[in-house]
Image (cartoon, rainbow, N blue to C red; front, side, top):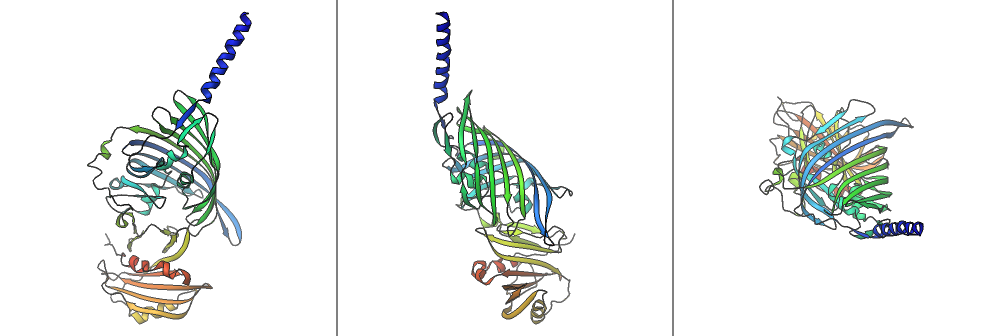
Length: 441
């Protein structure tokens, strides 16, 4: 009898344990608005950049690491995903090493540590209410979208061992896709112990990033505090296969990201007085989201929108931007410094000069004029528009000569295929008007 009772007791414990495991757990994040969170984020990337040189496939090692520590206050949220937050970075730094060359280090200036992260058309834009960022500062804030972490959850009660499909909105945000093609990410509640729920997320996602096709294999694990109703830890591993795009090379990489997320009391950096400069508009203001670029030799500086991407190497004699809109290559802008002068050449001379550009066969001049009321103290701005063939491709080109107050000269060429002329619109003129020649010191 004693053996039977012991057996029954053991069976009773097993059944009781099974009942506990089958109990539903509410995997829904508590409301985010007006909450404060401290995020500690690390990233390790190891991969290869692939390119073709002289018809041969070549690969170059590529490594990166980053660390971010920041506090943020959620200002707007829905469906478990925050759409706007004020942040203060205490640490924001990255190290990038290409082909075993000297590492490139990036960080934020102290006056740009206070920022706003705002979702616009499903893409997060990080900007500083205190002024424009440089591209390097923007890129150092382009890390895992911590505002979207709650979107990995099912938003309902679920039993241990059960699975759910992760919402498209969360996948697109966490994979940094401009457009999501397809995905099958699935979350599974693996266990619950000491008020800590462990969730596994695996699957494949495909989409467009900066005009390039990207495929990701995701293997992630998160921990959810059942009492606080908050994701407190995320380990995100991905295997990337990126095809060559208009502004980025082909790349394969293994990436590991770790996020520790802690709800905190109001930090001194995010008090109501600190948040006074935060814009209340539904979309981020263009004067704050634009980027400020200064030529390495300080020959010129320019302000431009973020959808213009740098494609020229740091040591290139020319500065080249490409306009990417909704994942499509629209136009290219090439900046070439020209010899200093005491007197600007005539408009006719400039038109004759650009018509002889190597690789360019001009068949029709569309416009030739001087831009009235040049800005930033510049003396002269000429504009010549023409159509023709550029390296065998039918192209429309807009040439500008900008002459500064001390005789500095800059030639800027905008190249666009005929079907994208309307999409480019007046953005060439707008950018040219933002060009200035800084004082040499």
